[in-house]
Image (tube, rainbow, N blue to C red):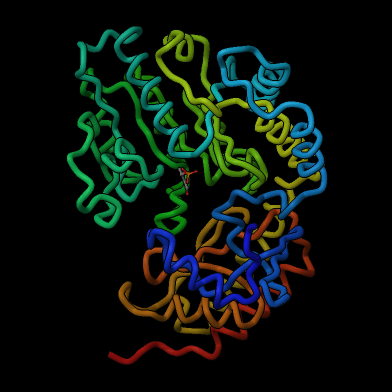
Length: 415
Ligand code: PLP
């Protein structure tokens, strides 16, 4: 028999005793979700202002996505790619039409999609660009976040992500983010096969590059015969107020890397989209995943993406984001604890005017929780605010009221 939990404390103690300590969660135990709301074990209701790191753009337990899940689960869940399924081709076509690509390769986690993109870029580098064997270089940027696998963290500049996990995978060159001159210099190397980055750096603390960076990066890639590898796992699927953040500068990445919200937070689905030239460099047996592209994932992802269009979530994210930043900018002007507000659409962050080591941002998030809003600090003094994109105008004002009320109670810690 499986035990049932009676209290939040019991749940926290169990995770603490039997789980790995690889996260530092806020002390809240959730047991139900609907739309923009979450409920804890004791029945307290919260606004979700994290959306599972932007995976739940369509809102929790969206009825259409859950129906797609349940209906498909009754028919067929997994075949592996040893056989064809009646859903994979449909889903691949759906992804290609939706995002404007020749081909899609479906995987599971975001890190895995990035691994896939790295392999595709390297393969293309050898087979099409003619880079000598094992000499391919991928240029990545400082402060990147692309996942947790050993290859992916080999390109990380976050000491916490890397410490004691070496040796690392060679073949990455790291340059500063939002630095066109550095990129131009790095891409002079004829062995570079890809430039790999996030159009807005989400995990790092919602760093938005200068206008023109994306378009310039695309131009330099083209000029140097290098693939533009865009990780839109957090920024994609309407989060930033466009379907893709790269749409802000009409950029069409050679490798588009997606995850999180393509399945509306229902089950892990990720994807890499590319042209025939790039995707067909990989042959049978050279890459795969048992669950990648399974029928359940295909049915859920198609419905989740259709919901984004049918409910105009891109437009809503853009409009609600304007309201949110406007309110937070006014808060920053009137309160010296809020240093600045940055973001696009509904991917935003405020920077707390205190040291990175201070507990202030954490304490604010705990106080927000007490007041019915869940958010999480990132990198010490930054708080990311990313609610589901189904949030209404009334709700966003309600949330801004909560944030203002809570922050007003805090002061800068004296040195
Ligand atoms: N890439 C970006 C931009 C992300 O924000 C994340 C997760 O936060 C990942 C990759 C990793 O995705 P996953 O946790 O599904 O492996």
